[in-house]
Amino acid sequence: MDEEKTTQDKPEESVEDSKERVQSKTVETLDRADEIVERRKRENDREEAILERKEALAARQAVGGVTEAGQPQEKEKKEQTSKEYADEVMAGKIPK
Image (cartoon, rainbow, N blue to C red; front, top):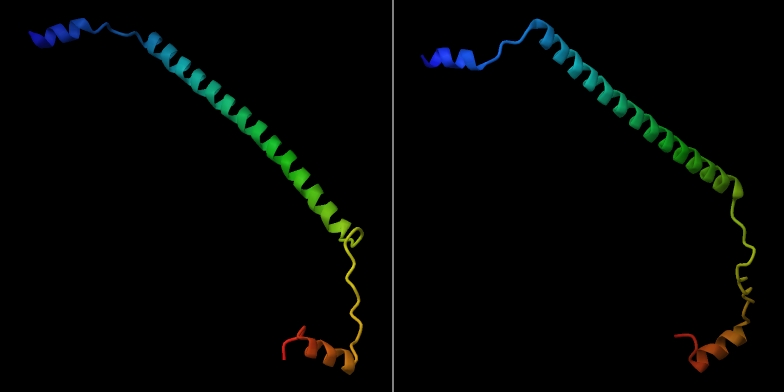
């Protein structure tokens, strides 16, 4: 008797209804897939633009080189005579 109730409670689906449900789920799935593809294309475009900027920056740095302009100049060391060296040692400026 319980088996009869469970079969009576379930409405019978027609083949037409099940086909419509399958088609609507398929359409929803395809729409979702299209959204994902579009989003991924936008992300790829953004990444490509960033990469182009990085490449341009690296090229400018490679071509630009290094300049010493504006840097403090090193003082040229003059060669000490033996008398000047001896005087510095005796004054305690240079350790023995």
